[in-house]
Length: 65
Image (tube, rainbow, N blue to C red):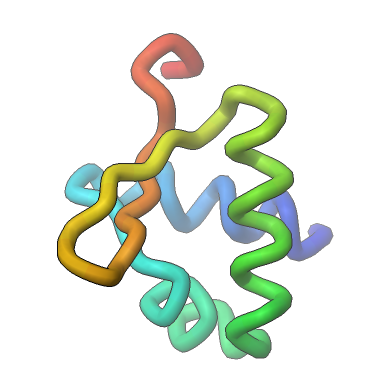
């Protein structure tokens, strides 16, 4: 399973969403790698994010589920 699939699968289980730091720690990948794949999934319309302070919290787009 590729990193992109792992990121998606992780976010499916986290209804409240995760930050880039959360994703990188849970998947044990570098912060920039997590950021890259979150951006790719968001560009594809699979994810969306909301800003909370300086953090971006990513969730699965409701249209996907």
